[in-house]
Amino acid sequence: MDLRKSLIHLKIIILTLIILGTPVLISAYSPRLYFNSDELIELGAEFQVDLLVQTDQPVNAYSINFVYPANNLELIRIDNSKSIADVWRDSPRVFEGGRINFNGGGLEPFSGDGGLILSIIFKAIQLGEVRFNFEDSSLYLANGKGTKVEPSLDDLTIKIREGNGEILAQNVDNNPPEVDFISIIEDPITPDQRILSFKVKDEESGIKETLIRTKHWLWWDDFEEVPNSLALSKGAWAINFRVVDNQGNISEKFIYDWKVFLKRILPILIVIIGALFLVINRIRKPRKVIINSND
Image 1: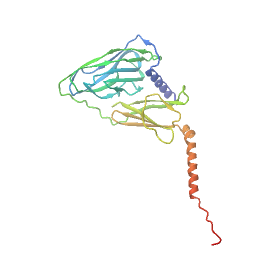
Image 2: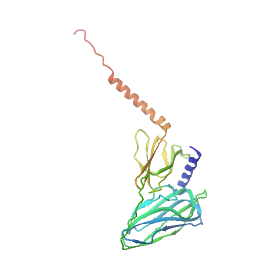
Image 3: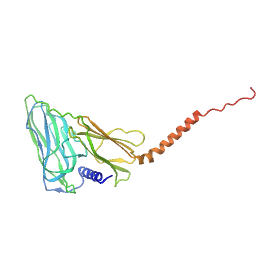
Image 4: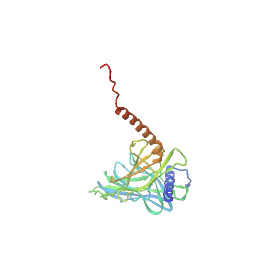
């Protein structure tokens, strides 16, 4: 593995540890999380709400929770195509009652105003005044320590009125997502496993999910959705990594560990082939014919 890949891999692991809640000090410094959207929406219309960050000091990890009124709004899609976060512990998760959770980080720190974390597309389905409320949310400074900060939280109020709402046109995306980086290294703490890290992007419709399946023997396991910095058993000798964007386009990468194959699978194949050879040879071997001399 070259130096660039090693550094990217290390950054991803550090970001994942920060997102998972590595013990850190709470800083007195307070950046800001806020929403941006039109504040007057017609019934039946689709509209976009942007989740943004403002900060004077560079930040590179985000743990954000907010709620929206699910009775008034239908969530159409979540778009992370222009996000400053390119490493996700999980895909943005939507819970019952209109709660959204996002945990992610950026390999490049952000400072300034208008840092786009997520765009969420809603449809107005019921009249009334609706409010987007932040819940427990944190940012982490890109200072080498992962210092946790509690930002100021600016909620958003939108009024839904009568009208003939328009549907937002979605950009046509026929291009598959890009896998910028994928790598596996030995786990320095747990010797019986390895760590998979990756960086993916889709600048048109955004990433929907990342999945893998593995071969420990001669067959593939089922695909399962995976976070970044995934622990893999050392028994896995083949890995199929799949990325799906929000338009259903797919990119895949295959990784093979031939050392594991030679050590784990090849001896078994030799035994199986040897047993088959003996069976076939026994079946094909001509039988001896005994002739009775008295006949």
